[in-house]
Length: 347
Image (cartoon, rainbow, N blue to C red; front, side, top):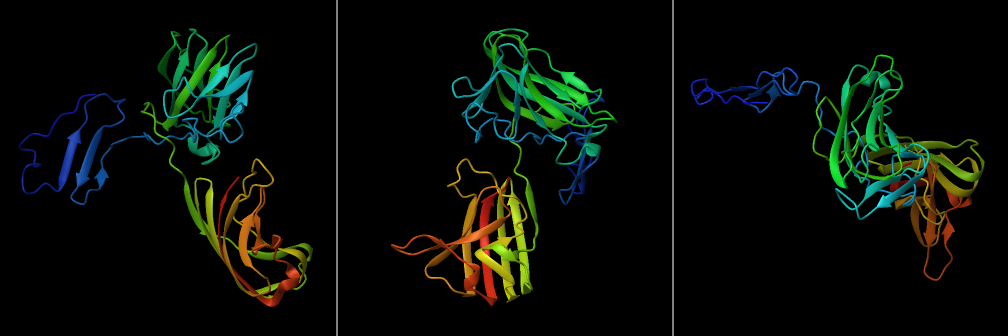
């Protein structure tokens, strides 16, 4: 794709150059046609068409393996014979994913459509690329499928024990039910995959990780207990806000009661905006933070914590040379106040 430079008399070198314009040459399939930049720095024209070089695949570099080194990397689903985290034959970063075929099709895949909904993707073109290493020709490949008629396999890796960048492009059909990216081996060999990237548009781009998603909003904290009932629980203040970056949630909240209801047992603050992550061990907490409490009796230092797979928090009380205990409902008055911050991993 050639770029024609601006002519000397086209106004770009004159005092009046509020509009810059470059025409990108004539190939109608080129991802960039023309670009205009005004004096404020805003871009316009027909640049970039339907191309978005943002990677749509989280953990496309296969660096995260929280389920273990012989299970699927985080965010991916595995099917077939054998999968392993590889730390010797790598293209990027610290790890690649190794797939071994014995007697059934072996692959990992990721659903892409869930974030924006399948309606967004119908009629759009996407390109999958991935670095692939294999010592045997015609065994390893990649694929995009839409669950209906649009399925695009790449060419096979050519063998030879080298890394090759393999790509495939598809336009999602009008009756698509999903958008799925997959990495495959279908013959007796080992294959290694690294730097998987899916972008919107018909061009492959150099690997970059998917940016962490950002979200902010409000939530309503709810006072409760591990036993008892809501009774006449009432509030004068009941506020919450949060930000979420990737799967890390930072939540703040404030509760002031006017009636503590009929709750008993351990105090819970429920209603967190996202379910907490299931941790590998029951002794591991998904999050913690800080709390200010008023009209609540406890002896020591109180800390909020979140256990695995829950949308509520409890409060540990620690004291030197004393057993760890929790804040209990019988020590919360009808005007109890909880002001807290908590950071935790979302499911």
